[in-house]
Length: 266
Picture 1 (cartoon, rainbow, N blue to C red):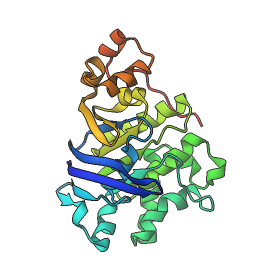
Picture 2 (cartoon, rainbow, N blue to C red):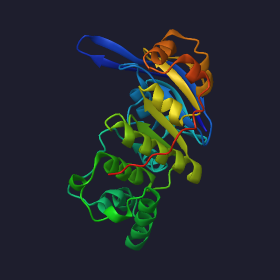
Picture 3 (spheres, rainbow, N blue to C red):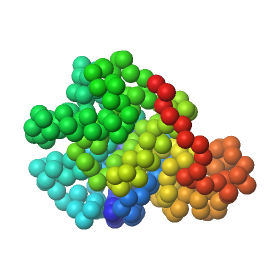
Picture 4 (cartoon, helix red, strand yellow):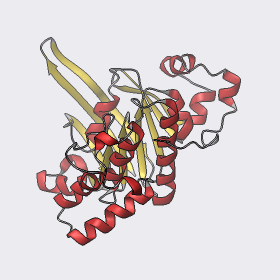
């Protein structure tokens, strides 16, 4: 379980102090696929990065699996981060390393023996369906394949939580659905908790069970995705649905875990 209590964060800019998050209170159940949606500048990426303290909160507490992340010193935080995988929008792969080398990197940092690294990398690449690309370099891969490498790397240390920061926003629609299907499959097989940042209502509909709507650094609405779609209570949620292009009747009757499966072709 992830429990966020009274979380606030502000940044100092040349024009003054800007509040990114204000008194965030949120609970995410273990094993959930939880979406955080908001327009540009809403604070959603800041919130996600506070979960592993890539951004330091100004106040409030974050507990992940009972571990109070906000109280850890540098050594303790380094250990805790091994159990918090992160997927980035721009992949963040090492161009000079092969697929094997990219996925192996966090295991090397953690001090795994070489034979265990190979075993684990091969195991994860099979899960993300990239076994045949083990010796390829990022420049030889498609966008979808690069993101699969990023997902494999995030899974290397067997995390309890997987954070996804707009992981599909730079991909074409077909590849986006393939990556979302993969994340759903990983959630089902491994039982880990996925927290997914997005600005697309269609992504919430496709994969998330529960979600929070963020606006100007505050959570304005939260609940099951089916309820948010069928009966939105706040203006921001309604704006997302209005820009979504799906008729209200179709939204109300939509199963967020239904639909056709699609695979990343390349």
